Image (cartoon, rainbow, N blue to C red; front, side, top):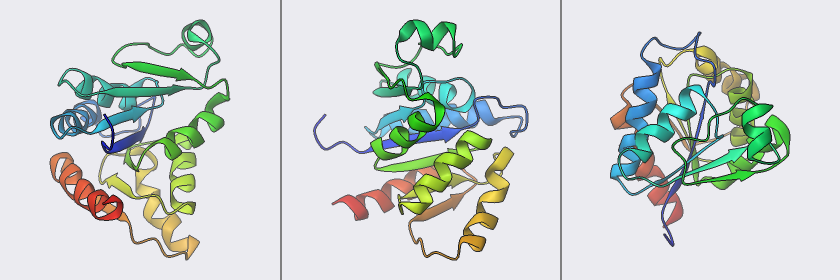
Length: 182
């Protein structure tokens, strides 16, 4: 696996406030990452990250998860999270906030799809650290506030892709990351 690009997926675990088609959009992004040989990283959770993991996994991509739990039993019984569609899950034992930091740091960049407070937490970490970011415009949830947060922050960050089409988003983001990394 060597120098493969690794992209973290940040998105709503509970998708009620997301675009009605958000699971398909997330699946498409996972699939496109797999087709391009990118390692997909998720929070080993439900909703958007689950569907992105499934899209990558079912299309021969490699998927890594970071769980908030200490072990598989806690992951399933306490956090009520799935074990499916990941090749490996790291059990951080750090709860959601600690897991979020690890998720952001593990990727070369982060794709944001829909989202709630956990996604905003990952967004703020990514923004503050000037991590390359891609935002699926129109995916719903807290995605609609990300532009406002950037304007209010008044901090330069020129490594953000905004795109409605999931395939075009992956293409643009990979070009940005290749220029950033190599």
